[in-house]
Amino acid sequence: MIVTTKKLFEAAYGKYAIGAYNINNLEQTMGLFRGNVESKAPFIIQISKGARSYTHKKMLEGLITSADVVFPDAIFAVHLDHGDEETCYDCIDSGFYSSVMIDASHEPFDKNIEITRRVVEAAHAKGLVVEAELGQLGGVEEHVSVDEAHAKLTDPRQAREFMERSGCDSLAVAIGTSHGAFKFSGDQALRLDVLADIQKVLPGFPLVMHGSSSVPQEEVARINAAGGDMKGAKGVDASQFKRAAELGVTKINIDTDGRLVWTRVHREYFRDKPSEFDLRPIGKVFMSEYARFIADKNQKLGSAGHLDELRKLVG
Ligand code: G3H
Ligand code: 13P
Ligand code: ZN
Image 1 (tube, rainbow, N blue to C red):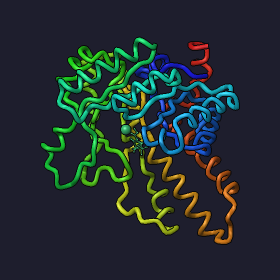
Image 2 (cartoon, protein in one colour):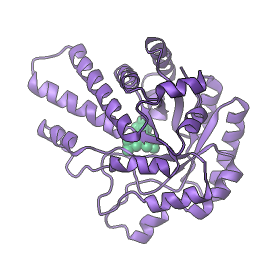
Image 3 (cartoon, protein in one colour):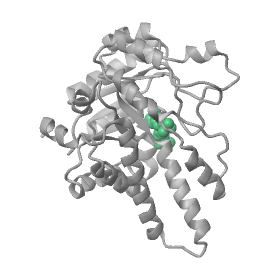
């Protein structure tokens, strides 16, 4: 059942975070639904601009519609990840999405508000909700001084004004995470102190953490042992997710970890079966490993086991 992210956030706020997982193809879609239904977790499907153009934007909509039939117990939202203005309008007009993210975080404060406000007006007119971003994620390098690194984080003093003037429904905050497999090259860690300050000025308002893959070290070791080269890959400590949820984070974005599962499964499979050339046996291994990964992640997010109570709220 497709629901709005708003409904999911109302149920989760202060208690657990909902996993927001990116998909690009059939195998990810199957593993995603299976893992969430098995762990009884609500979830958010994220579709990036790159995912929309990987095959055709309508292909993913078709996959999701079919998965909804195959997995009637699933409760989920469909969300545009890191949209620009044009892509947001396309998704809003499609009638398929529950919510869009307008990512104008690279723009100056007033311009970010102006762009976000336009998208919010278009989205609300069609019953969608909008995630915006304040502050900037990125690879924080060891050579960047603490002050420079800190300048990229969300400024709690700006958060309330941003929310009120833009009208956004949830806010992605920069609290030290970055996208990809190489986070925290120095001693940096999640800035839960900054998150706590943001929650103080925005009590009850849903916050979003991007760049939250954990990059499990055993996964990296297996990839490297099977011919990969991912030395130094490092991610977010998943034991901090539940604290982040208490501090107002209702959505945690995870893409890289799923890519690592794909990479490990394929590298090991073809290393161990060099004469294999059928795509289905390996596809089955991936779907099953991906489902296992999703179910495990939902335990860490605290979202596992909440499906039945949520059904009563939305059904
Ligand atoms: O934050 C970005 C997500 O990991 C999606 O990545 O734009 O390569 O699909 P993508
Ligand atoms: P990761 O690269 O840490 O998985 O972050 C994904 C993300 O933020 C998608 O928007
Ligand atoms: Zn992101």
